[in-house]
Image 1: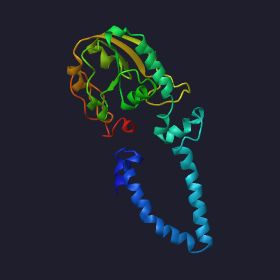
Image 2: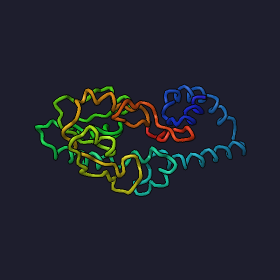
Image 3: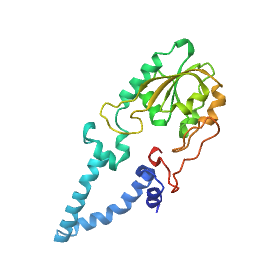
Image 4: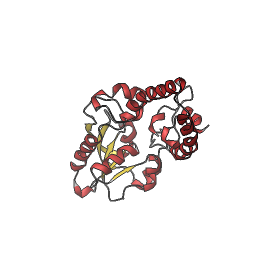
Length: 234
């Protein structure tokens, strides 16, 4: 039942990972009995089919192919695209951060938690924040931060509260692979119109919501059919 619910609500396979040990334990003994029962023709055929069915899943779900060959996989498994390009991403964002005066105590603000995590992993010296999902709960940047690198936001989203906004780069994973980060704009922002503590409630986003600096935005956007626009972002 949970599998069906997550399938139709845009959930991820790992959402029910906690149930896997119990399911495997419950099925282990019956499976062993069935395998040991004999070497009938039907059993051999079924085991062979199970193996053949698992091969495509291995290619789709495990990092077996080089990045340059992932495009067909990403068309089926969106998450595979989100495993590519993070070192280059952090390098690009880090270069933008390094370009800002240290006296301004700059920070990095990313559109989603995956981007923030990549900066933490590959540039641990860079203070990074995000209003996405639970990352928002870590709190806003300090009031001393008078400059920021903004990643993944459009000009319309950030221009209202950023007095001096300059696009300094675009994210390129190096493989031409389409994912959430490919082509994302990287901005430097100075002369904030409001303190971070006032901006922070309006930067909060849950799931695939987008921050709206004119008011709270914590619910997903929907298309005319009522389906979430960015189911894969959660």
